[in-house]
Image 1: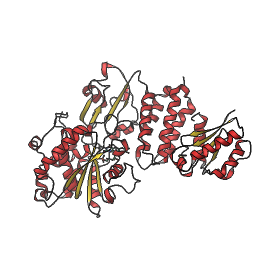
Image 2: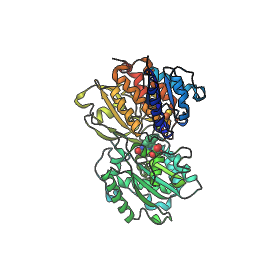
Image 3: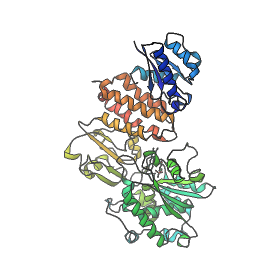
Length: 107
Length: 410
Ligand SMILES: Cc1cc2nc3c(=O)[nH]c(=O)nc-3n(C[C@H](O)[C@H](O)[C@H](O)COP(=O)(O)O)c2cc1C
Ligand code: FES
């Protein structure tokens, strides 16, 4: 089954560098040959003050305030490594809302 | 039928200065020294007039709150930003009854002791702008505004300001920003304009139609005003009917008039006598009503109890065969486009609702998806600087309740 690495590309996350972040993740995922992972944009996760935000789905793993120095660990997770716990700081009720939306197929 | 704003309840063309004076216009202004600001406020409070800009806030209270602020100067803003789909009432008032409006603005400005009033008018409204401009000149020459009005010692300057034609520019604090020469972005509240408004000073911001009611109330008294409408929603309101009706247009009716009267007697029913499927009685941010609700009185409380709202009186009617979903998509798209983008939650919500509706339109609807509407709306409720964030909720949630079949997949 396909996995998605959804990177918010709305105003706030973009202003914190989410465009470069998505590009970097795409390049690294391709270089590693992770064919089952698709890195793509998302319209907004509603945690705009804490961006850049990204969600790995269906893992339901949310990384906030991601910087380029975090990319190594995130790619390692996408390749089957451990969750990057230090980037997991979002309020559970918002997570629940967004995960349910993703479950219903709103990409 | 007698009206408060339009003498016969219908639009009869541009009323010039002489015609307006011959029905008692500017009478109070020409004897301004005989009234105190408190006299005018007491009359407006007793009339029970509620704001016609959508929220229904008691106008007398707003006047009193502004007058009370010790900080000076005070300002008045006439909000003619009007950019809600289907709403033309403010344009029609400005085009036809500019003196009635100026009369009310001058009285309101005196009541709050403002030194300047700004007439903020949608810049696409050429005829309205022209009519107000002419009326301003005539009223100035007659001595109704300027230095020392009618020997009262009260001086007032009136200025017109063009309003950008986007929806949020009509929000009161966004209007203040525009008048200050900035972008139309709503401010965080509190502070409210009555205490810290234009240039940080106490400001009375009222809708065009609200201000148009002031002169008749002062001239003929609160009791006369209350002979129209209901106890909680006194007076009349201007309702707008769209092109789906036999007789589209604006109609001034006493509040509390049954919805059926507006749609059947005034509007002549849907074109071609088609049956009604659903009604949005108060613009795109009101909840849907069903044909069973036709006998509901058009007033603030009755519509709220029925899960809807009176808004600014823009009534939209859907017929059998019209898709509620398509209408919701237009509404959601409108709010997503008009969200100013300042508040993350509003951006997220309005975009998300469009994305959810698209899914349903593509035939991928199911119960789990339908549930997400209410969750997204509840999560974001009140999390914006202005109330745009709360606007898509009522039409969507009422449609989920009343037309669940439209949300199911193919
Ligand atoms: C997004 C948005 C748009 C609005 N547009 C208008 C408008 O075009 N005209 C208007 O009078 N009020 C508009 N309002 C309401 C104003 O903020 C304000 O409540 C109103 O001008 C107060 O006048 P009233 O007390 O006479 O009703 C808008 C509010 C919001 C949230
Ligand atoms: S802008 Fe990225 S979460 Fe909202």
